[in-house]
Amino acid sequence: MAIKKFAVGCYDDVAGLFPAVEKVRNSGYKLHDVYTPFPVHGLDKALGHKDTDLHVAGFIYGITGTATALGFMGWIFTSDWPTNFGGKPHFALPAFIPITFETTVLFAAVGMVLTFCYLNQIMPGVKKHVFHKRQTDDLFVVVLELNEHVSEQEAIDFLKSTGAMETKVEMAESEWWYGRFDKEEEYEKLNATV
Amino acid sequence: MNERFELPARLKTTSIALMLVGVLVLIIGGITLLNGDHHDQTRFWIVLLQTSVFFVMITAASVFIQAAASLAQGGWIVAYKRVPEAIGANVWVFGLIAAVVLLFIAFGLDIDGHNPIYHWVHPEGDAILEGKSAFLNKGMFAGFTIVTVALWAFFGRKFRALSLAQEKAPKNSTKIYWTMVKWSAGFLLVYALTQMSTTPWMWLMSIDAHWYSTMYSWYTFASAFVSGMAVIMLFVLTLKNHGYLELVTKEHTHDLGKFMFAFSIFWTYVWFAQYMLIWYSNIPEETTYFKIRQQGPYGLIWYSVFIINFIMPILVLMSRPSKRNYFTVTFMAMAIIFGHWLDFFIMAMPGPMGADWSLNWYELGVFAGFAGLLMFVVYNTLTKASLIPENHPLLKEAVLHES
Image 1 (cartoon, each protein chain N blue to C red):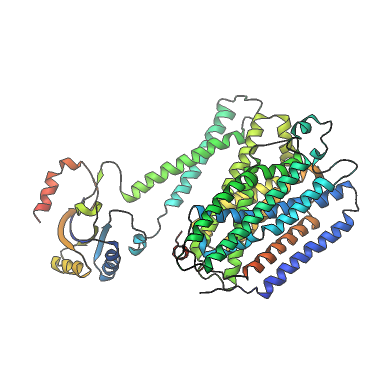
Image 2 (image 1 turned 180 degrees about the horizontal axis):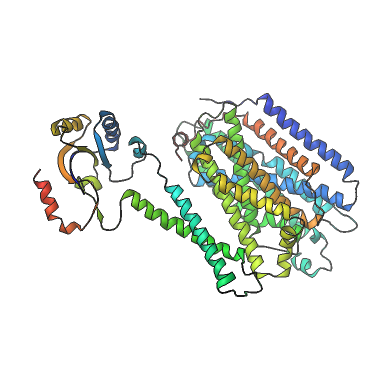
């Protein structure tokens, strides 16, 4: 939890957003994040985001599922409660495969969804500051993080020079928090003072 | 951009050398095997059947991927569209060979009054075969074979003709594009009624005429499709190696690699589904099929097929970098083609050959001959038109494609 100062620039189309992102990355300003109303193809590359290791995590979850299912069924049917099903061997591998497969998929899927949520800091009830209400509607919002060494006016002028149609400076929470949107009066007051 | 493919001398020599190996092996086989005992004669024909059916099915898979991509309006395939087109336009070569071999086996092969490969030719006195004789008889077999091969060959050439006609059409005209969509819908229907159902019953499953499986055609289709993808991959990469197809990048071959990976898993799924249901219900007349293949003399091939077609693809092709590495995908494409040829081997051999099978000079020589023929005819077709479908409406999308 840390309140920081941010400079916000709004762009009204994708064509203006990409050159602006490039200029921000070359300028030395600290880019906090970019908010768009819909997924923009190629923006992750423009921002310099690297591939995550989500798929490696998925592989590990999958293997865990395979091991869990085979181990559990093997233990049940060979030592815990051996039962004769139609004369099949106790460790009836072909019969275990469908369940093993399903468990592998289940572990991989659920594990990857939770990891994805963790990496993106999204969960029901987890909140982040909304820099501009129209960022979920039709505006593309670029947010720079400022500190005491950076002049607010220079940051605003810079954003305007990249083609921002609307700019502002805002004090905001930089991390996520857990809370409800209808009980945020105190937090809203903080912004009103800037 | 007008990329004209000129066949490099080395490729030409390789393909002709492979074909010569095939012809040589056929001549030697014709002299030694056809004059040998019943077993040798059966071996001569069953290997030809297995390999020619395998090759006609993997070339027909190229027609199928064109139809599927056209119906799904897939742009990614347009970058190397000429390759599946050229393979599809040559279905007739392999179709003709397969039809001649199949019809000869059904009609002409007779050893001491019985047919060593298709027992159902003489159903008299066998209650099961008599019961099936309304479907499994010479007339139906000939009809299905000729109709299947004719339709596959026709659609293969039709798709190529449509694609070449698009080049001469006015700029930005989409008329032929939509005509292609209509023909593609027609081909999917044809393909569903042949490759995905009746044709494998007739050509391969009827070798073990007492046995049947409803998964069989799907399983054969999966084999043919994944090898067909591997064949396209090999042609694309060879062309790239010789400096052609500059528009094709790792983004495109990555997609082909995904197909090779995904359909290897799909093949395993169908292969295992067929096996597990029979293993679980344990009915003698069904398990006899797997008894000889898994536990009997074919165990070595059975487990090799499983390792090459499932374990290797899932371990090697799973990660993204390996699908984008030309060496690993080339290696895996060759492994997959050989593995699925072995899969067809194990479908065809146990019925007529029994415990005494061989995988030797004759089998591998025939395989080499067919591979050389495939290279020769496809490269020859590729030289006839520009490698880039310049006037195709989705070409720009294909160039910008990211996987």
